[in-house]
Figure 1 (cartoon, helix red, strand yellow):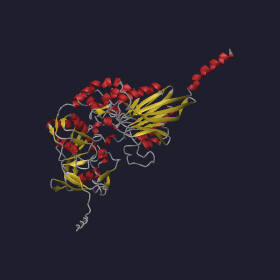
Figure 2: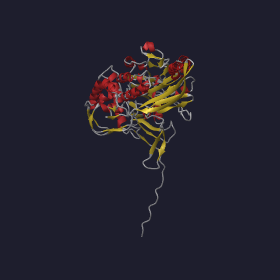
Figure 3: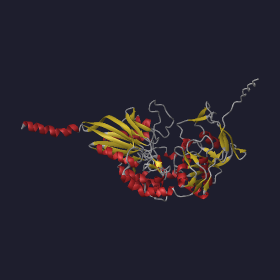
Figure 4: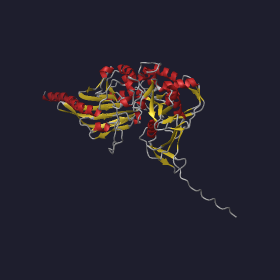
Length: 549
């Protein structure tokens, strides 16, 4: 009888002993940019990742450990024709395919990114209302007035372990989107918000996870500043006490889980091609749980099968999107290379210039190469695919008034990223700063000028003229720019503060489609209004050898 009682006591005690330790799995995505399906509809080829594949991966990992939390860091709803035509354009307005797919994944929470604001508050509100999981942006002011269903934080429970999630959006949003897209919202300093909220969350929860739509303003190995602290604050966040895990995004970097100070940090790349997995080992200490160890990795989604539920949920919209992308508009008379930073006047960027000038009536146009990756559109049928390939962002247009001196400053800023030339082998190779995105190398149409990439920054643009007349510092000029530049994007001088002459409140992709359809036949050609012109040294050619007798 005593043996039976002892055995019974051991059996009853076993769950209590096991419950003294556990593993909490955190799964995280960010910057998925509406990559719902594993296909690139613009380039008509398979894609490396998708929300549909994230769904399959998450389902398997969640089944293996019920103590799983699934989070997203924002920039989810913008980025593909499927997303665009679902929530903005007339193919299927109101249905957000990314939100529908994320609902099927079973996210526990997501944080607002900057690209969530690209279509304005009405569209954002409609998308968030379709979400079956909460969206977070701690300290965001004006939420009630804007009628946005957005919270600050939440506490989840997994097998008795309480996990606090604090969401932080990017405070630089007002410098990327026009005021009409975000007012009456007010964007707080995320570091101050975290300082105030993390200690309180620490008291209420066993594990504190901060999800922030930001990258790192310092090199993670050396701690050296990279000059991006106006939009990136991950390093400073990671140094705050009380945070167990910091999940970042925005910068599209693949940062597998690692330590910064005592905080586990990670970033899962972009386009739903990667899922961050962090396994936190927790032990019961009195009435609380404490993180005592961790393991983590970034998992590729490319090998996963697409979730059939996601395919079915967006199938009808996808079919209508493909039909719209293939709609005949005219003929492309010659191949059109697209992408990269041009080292000479570029026909694809000049096509953007032509649309901006036509839509705005301005004399001058400022534009940058925006296509992701290099590709060539072959000669043949012209369809809306070309517009999406040229212009993947939903920017509108603004005409601003600049002086000649200010325009010169703008151009100098646009060519600051060149760091030299390598002429060891001809033709010479232009060298550029890899930290500066290609979409910050704007060119100007409507004027002519030369660029010396070897001259000091700020003194590279020469011979700026309109027609045959040099631009004087006191000239008054109207320049059409996109809404990203007009809001301060790229930190170009003068553009955000310049007087606004008029605004064209239609997405550039729509303007491009109209332009292509109205022209019927497009013959790609650069106007050659600007060129690189480094200085040359005069030398004497060696004398020819004397003829043999």
